[in-house]
Length: 394
Picture 1 (cartoon, rainbow, N blue to C red):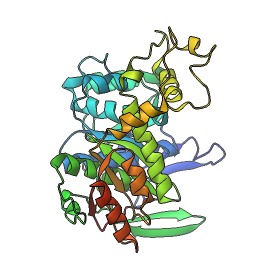
Picture 2: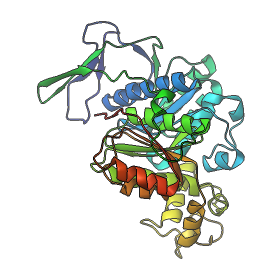
Picture 3: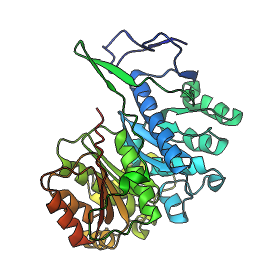
């Protein structure tokens, strides 16, 4: 297939719309089911690059959950403990521990479930039946992978009454060195970002604390590779082989850090006894539980504990989650990794990161206030590496 006609572009009034290769060659993927849209394909191609690189660098099956050209999370296929399985709503999924790829997607989907609602899924390895069963029960737009087992493909082809989009990407496809895009009739050409990030990029440690365990190296690489495919400005928190909070597309560095930190805090708080023991009514579905849990933790628009509200969700009224109890729990955390796609101009982001248990930081460096940022890291006992690599993505 050399050209694929799309229903419309970013919006329904943007017609006609299609995709093709600039040199007239075959597209590097095939549509096995459904009909992808313009934004679907942007997410699919960005997501595939992310999982391919992360899988190659860390030598592990990888999955990503994408929404609007940024990942909500990405993860490698490490097993989930019982608490994390319950927080991710996969404790009932048979065979989960037998499929590292399913574990990767369970983590990626479970990180920021509100943002992942209606996501695009990218898988580094052949999609197996367990992964397909997990995908089949979540609300998503489509999936891209290098291939699918027959049982997995059959399950996915039945999703959305047969309309679910399934793409098969050529694992060996490599684009040319130069990439071109048009904005307002003007063509932009640049070398594509083919710089592979490795542990060697973490060698320039500038803090007093220079202890960087293998687990921290892994998590910093997860954060940096996620940022490489995230709309800038961006910051990512990572822990246990997955991105646990992504702050994308903000104009200020500290706002990226706050947004990502709030998401990381929510991910941790979802795993507390206070939240895992919420007495949900049996007919409340996963998506509605996501909204209620965030409302319970953050006391957003609807007070889910108010009289007349809690009865809609719970069999009995849960005890509130006091702010001081949440703060005490978050203050007990450590070992979180933080990556930034550009330098920190001030130390305010480090202060915010400290409140989410960050112990390890990787950023390009190059600010006139690098010394102030390093000093703040030293005050908290953090380890910081200056990579020298800016990772803007637009």
